[in-house]
Image 1: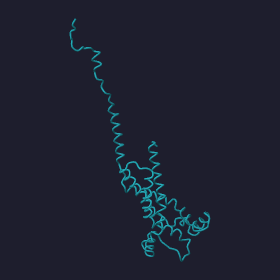
Image 2: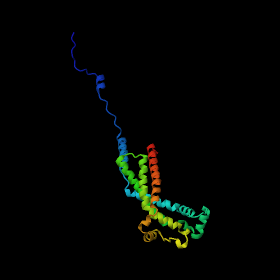
Image 3: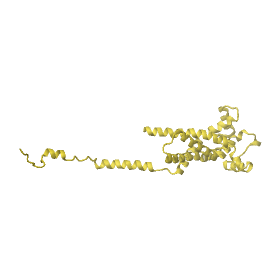
Image 4: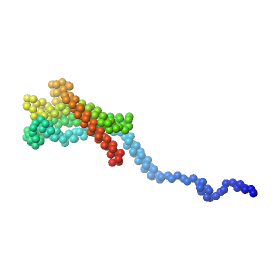
Length: 235
């Protein structure tokens, strides 16, 4: 008995199985929204803040903080140079110099913020960006090292203003014949340059730089590390 070959069977069931199921495509508006979100995220990642902005924001934040806390610095220096209590020191400054006495040496303090704070924060941000670009993820020890470098460089730049700030605040506690009598920070810079030479502006720079290295190394690195941890957790 021979079976005849009738060719391919034309069955609706077989053709239904062999027919390819079309892929599902999301609606056009949904795909456009996703593409838009990706473009925004990519543009945000690619956008870089100009380097000078890091210096400006650091300096301005330091200026605002200095104006608010300056009376505390004045009281601290006066108390360290005498044996008076906080209350007695505040009353003496108020009676001898008035309310303006709490802002003695403000010009030097503000210039210190515009030099020291501006430099250390700007330099640290630049070093951090360079490190991440070349090495990717930076560990905590590396961040501490970058903070120490920024602190040393910033304190070196700000040492002259720090020197003048201390002298201008403490001047009132000295005998009249031993007072510096600086009118402002600019006149003080030229006076020190004239009387003690240009290197005299950096008197006490070594311990100042050592302190700045420790403070900025721990402060800036801890702040950066904490911010990265919070960002990774989604907060």
